[in-house]
Image (cartoon, rainbow, N blue to C red; front, top):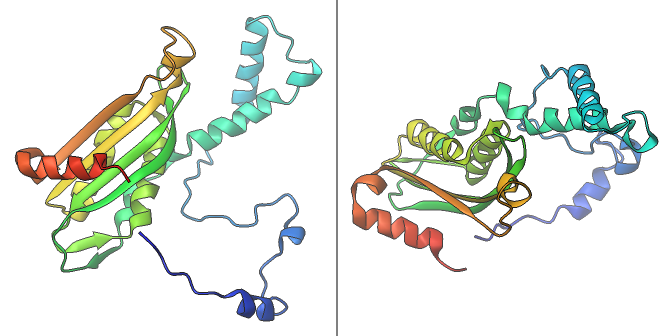
Length: 229
C-alpha cells in the first residue's frame, strides 16, 4: 500500500521561526517526538528492580560494584519499565475510533513486527503478527491494529495468549464478521538456553467468526497471509 504524503518542507522552513516546536539541537537529551499513544507504566518500582538486579549479579558470582556493572541495575530497571509498559494500559482504546465504510471484503495488515517477554523465563521473543478482519460496515485506521499488537506484547506474555487477545479485541471492538490473527516468532528461551535450537519458529493462529466456521473463507485469508510479496 502506498501513501501519498504532501511536501511541506518549504512551508515548514517558513514557519520555523514562528512556531514553538523545538529543534533537535534544542531538545538536548529529551525525546524530539513523544508519541502520546505509546503505553506507559508509572507504577514501576525502579529502585526495587535495581536492588533485585544487584542481588542477582552477586548471586551469580559477579561484583555489582565494578565499573562495567555500576549502572547496569538502573539500565535493567528502565528496560523493564519499557518492556512491561502495556500492563497498566487498555489496548482496546486504539480501536475506539471507527469509520463507516461500505466495504465487505478482507482487510489485512501483514508483518507487524513486535517484541515481547516470555513470562516463563523473562527472555524476549520477537516476530511478526498478521491481522485480517471482515468488516460489518465499520473499519479502523490500519496503524491502530499495529498499536494493539505493540501494547498487548508489552507485558509478561506467552505467544498463544497474545494471539488470542488480539483476535478477541478486533472481533469485539469492530463487530467484525470474521477475524484471523497469525503470529510467528522466535523465542530466545529455546534458542539461547535449554534445548538451544536457533532458527526454530513458533506459529500460532486465532480464527473468529466466518474464518473459523467456513473452510473456504479460512483458506482465502490464510492464502493472503502466506502470499509471497
